[in-house]
Length: 149
Picture 1 (cartoon, rainbow, N blue to C red):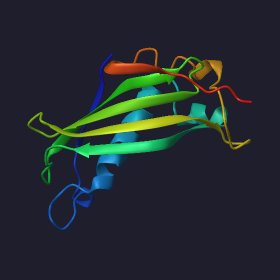
Picture 2 (picture 1 turned 90 degrees about the vertical axis):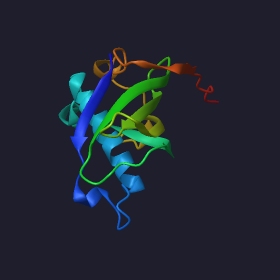
Picture 3 (picture 1 turned 120 degrees about the horizontal axis):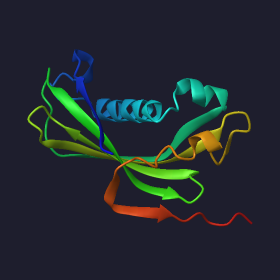
């Protein structure tokens, strides 16, 4: 399933050079992730109920084409990798300008954290299938976790 959201950009997304701020790209990608989780019946309320949160280890952004002030942008999300127990995941976001040109690629590597224990955790059964319906990237890979000794 392709998951993509179109957003109108805002004045506050741009710097004095009329370039979209580099952090704005990442903020839109984060919003897409939250909306994706909700579309899979795991809203912010479910995160709170299970005392669970997503965390990022890495966030890499590659800029391709400029986005102009006032343009609508589209941001998608694809699954790049996941561990067998769904504890860790890699996602790729593509950001398109209003003309449909690829403007940025954002890659994130994350996991789930138990907010009480402040430790990484395997998601509850209600969240284990969050990425089942996600479109996979061409370079999708299984994330192999090192055994804890």
